[in-house]
Length: 82
Image 1 (tube, rainbow, N blue to C red):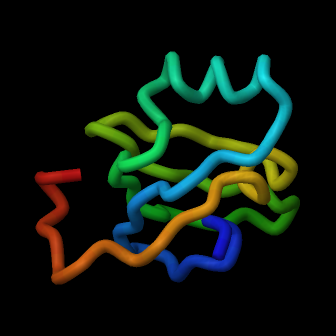
Image 2: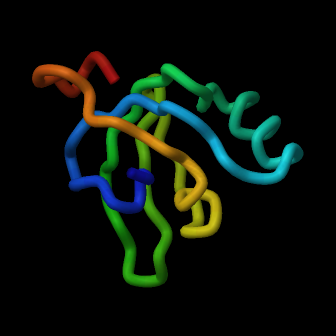
C-alpha cells in the first residue's frame, strides 16, 4: 500500500520508494527511505498529506505520496517516538 492509503494518526514503515531518481535522492536527504518510520498526520482536500518523520512534519503532494510504499508498524507507538 502507499502512504496515501494509510489511516490518519497511524505509524507506518517505508518498504520502498518508487519514483524518479532526483525525487528519491531528495526524500533520502530528508530521512525518508526504506525502513523509516513515519506517521500520517493529516490529509488535505487537494491531495497533500502531512507526515511526521523523525520529529519533523513534512507536507508532500499526492504524486510523491503515491510512490512511497509502506506497511503498518507493528504494535502501537507513542507520539514521542516517531
